[in-house]
Image 1 (tube, rainbow, N blue to C red):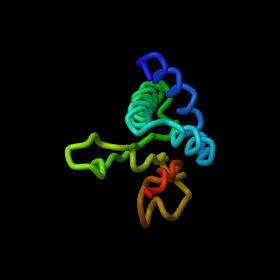
Image 2 (tube, one colour):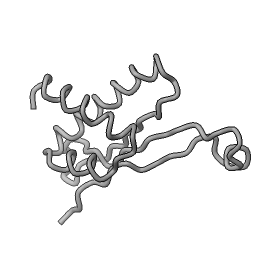
Image 3 (tube, one colour):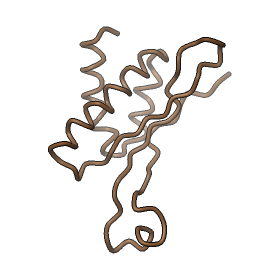
Length: 111
């Protein structure tokens, strides 16, 4: 994918992630090769930060990468979560974590 394609796909997918649509997001990301998948996820994270600067109530996209299974290979996307601040009346906010983490991506299974 070229830079414009990565940006366009990230714009489409950031809405899915912020909305918690795990099935559609996983399907779209797993159709890509690993390098494109990571590039799109990083662009989604960047776009999400931009959007959160004007609307801090949006959930925060967090990506996790892992080294390739091949020595010296590039990193790959291993997880994508959204983080939202729990409501003030939620007891987990006071006795646990202030934030709720929701998994919105399942990486492809290794053969």
